[in-house]
Length: 455
Image (cartoon, rainbow, N blue to C red; front, side, top):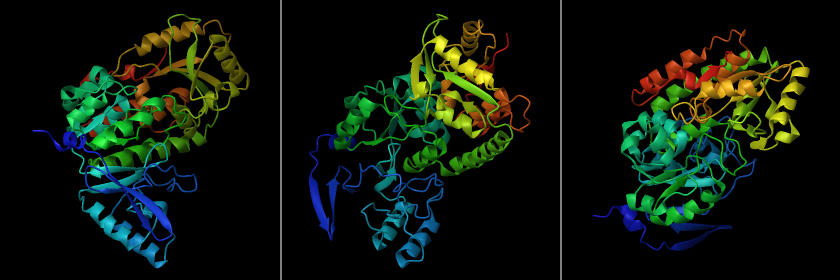
């Protein structure tokens, strides 16, 4: 017997144009029977975006805090009565107006009815997901670790080949899930046949993202561009990992209690690190490498301007060289060893303690050995009169909810005399003791996630 999603793939979708008052909005009837506002797909300007302080960018979150609850109903009523200013997210039904219809729509969201829920994705675009969400496809380390944290592993029925190959041990459902191939070239036919409700991309990919909605939406599959890592061919940072996780958890109908427990821990750690960073700001500087060629003179991919890891480093008082050099203006760029040395020498001459961070695919992925890669880096810069100190971090640590531990490690490693009260090893253990869905701690080697090189 075919499921609803498979049947939906055979349905030709009709477009119905509805004109109301002065403003005209197009609604597309999809396979769920819900009408979808033409605001879906609209890119919001900086001025139109919800509050930066909000970590739940879901329409209906009228007071733009971190939760969608009864407080939003009260706030919405005050907006309608003129007691409060209108917010972007107050338009619960996303029709372009804030009125009594939004009160009704918000109550439906709170009641978890079968319906569309609107949100702002990582492209700053209005998007929608159909509830209920029972089956999802996820990709890359961002998808694996996020699904684990937000409590939706039981909904995972498809994964990309990186999860199948490297991260299936995180949850038993991942090991049983079918593979849809790669993020760059997903097997859309397989997704449609499998009858998933939502495809959550592992990372944004310039080419695939332009195609995926057109391939999957007609079959009743929503495509969710919410991810916690840097992208491929898309020059946008994803520094607000906490916002992505909270929004994703709500939309996928995950375990919100667990997410808010994580958020409380997250905020305490980040606030402590930021305060400590203010006391030592810009005394240490670093470059981060994304590749470690076996040739000591081979070109290396270096993170640059608006790379998520670099943005985060500066939150905690570390000068990310890639944020300040014209020659490193891209998220990442491949440059020669001599150029890398010149940057390190420049900052050393300015009085900084310099560090070179190896950011290879170690961790659970274990495509490379972090300690061996760091030893190779030490050889690479041995000829310098003042070589940088070598540190290492698995790439998945910064592309996931583990980024909190990444920041503690950075501060511990690059300001070793700073007593910030946050030990990255203790935080690592705490995270997996409290937030993993299954016990896979025995699979982890912390020295393949975070390490300081000692000759």
